[in-house]
Image 1: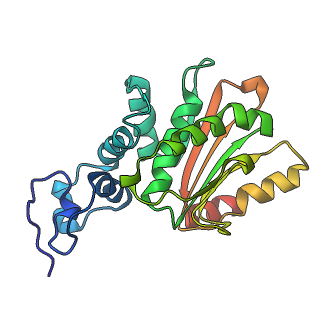
Image 2 (image 1 turned 120 degrees about the horizontal axis):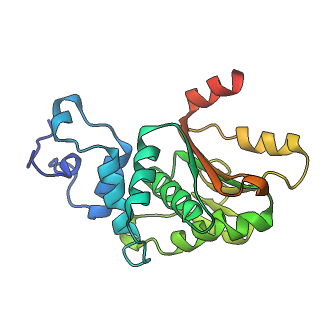
Length: 222
């Protein structure tokens, strides 16, 4: 039976004897992904706590400035499935959406689909994907495997040939609307996240949705 070595430690899931030593960042990502065993729930500090620490450790050298807006945005990401952020231009909405999406994917890259959508490829390259590419390139080696990036195709896949597990940039207005809808709803995985920048007439808004597969199916059939 697994024995807990230090019940008061903030990284309790990885102080079982059978886990051995792992980099702290991998422990934080595990804590962000998993709910605690009921017997240990009182020692669990919540997804927001572990995801914040994971983000700060993942991009410690990327000059990510932590401020109240990021704090509120991350809390909303952890607590709700549907989120809409509003704010002026250049207030960091795209960067924060990309930051949270990358950390969410790194928690379970082999079982997570992340969609980053904008109106056109040009808008995608200037907004969400610009930050996705920049932040992904700065993930330190101790975080573990970070996939096979093909930045020019707006794609970070778990491994070569994988069309489900990864981060996918989509331009929803480049082509027929039916194709865009098919691309958006065609990802069926254990975990899924979709972040989008809206049309130019409402360019100050960013919407982010984090769902499970069952929630996604129910919403599509409504």
